[in-house]
Picture 1: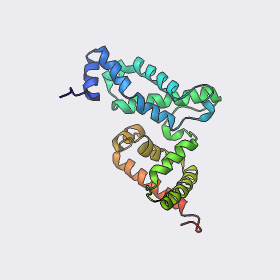
Picture 2: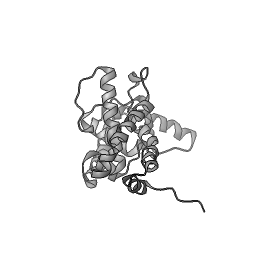
Picture 3: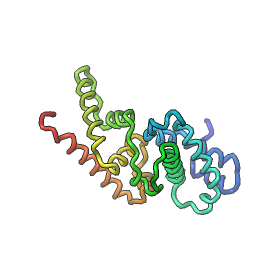
Picture 4: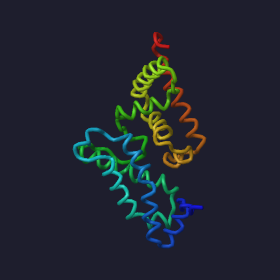
Length: 207
């Protein structure tokens, strides 16, 4: 039988006791999730200067420097805390490289343009998979309609769909990120889907 890998709570406990390897493992285990979060929002205008891995690396450096304070205070669960640092780093780098002037506040106040690749992937997650060739054609057409509707959706609605379906955050994690209750997150997600559905139904010539 193989030994069970320590989970985040185990690592937090050991890191709080000063175990250096646990601190390193805490930061390393969430690198892929952070990369995903950054990549789905990454402004392609930044590509000549940096990529999502650069953003994640700087966010992890921020986390390493603040980890002792976090371990003492535990203001929120570990991954939402780490994700917040990555979000703030992404905003700062975007401001720096695109000469934007905007305060770094709540996520819902930041208007990140949704890259085409992310819009298509999100549309694909929201459309039921087809099996036959004809169904695939319908699926592709519907996915393109969803992508266009997403572009018209309010930023706050689109963001909760991104977190749930592309980042695959749990309802509890989204609640921590947004500073809301789980019930409020469920309602917000449902309303975002309803609004997307209404946008898809606005053209009477389309099924």
